[in-house]
Picture 1 (cartoon, rainbow, N blue to C red):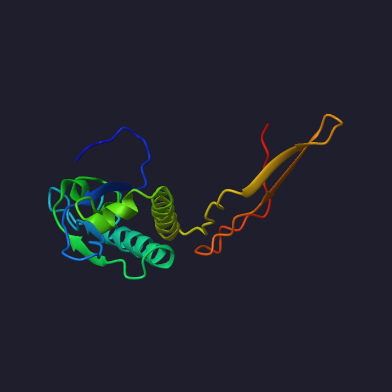
Picture 2 (picture 1 turned 120 degrees about the horizontal axis):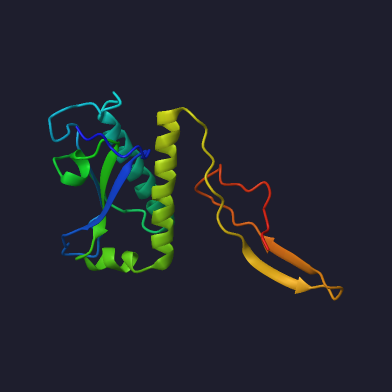
Length: 187
């Protein structure tokens, strides 16, 4: 067992794109991989937490990603399995870990999504939300998702050496906790 370097790490994510093609215009979809045992067949982490936390993380992440994609992009996005397997990224770690196969880099329909910057932002946000929710459940705290960036930002000179800043909040229809109550302005 590795002693470690005394750096606290809460979880691990390996982010991949899978292989595979379809013969029609559907996506391959999202697969999650976890391991219930480590390299020495242990079913608990060194801190005593069950390695079933890997499955919890995997399920939470896949659910968040697929649900968000279905709402914003493709109502038929494929939710593939949550697979228990001995992939290195899933079993070697001493913290909860998951291997995400987001989509297929060989399938045209998946690649269309993959090349969309807004899709990549939204999927990254889904991953962030799932990690936050997982840590909240593991550590028993309430989470608040970071609000989306403001829109319609402008800075107007008032003529007396001052500047008036205006913007509109961007509502996150997928996350009720991401409602900004106030903003900090840095100069």
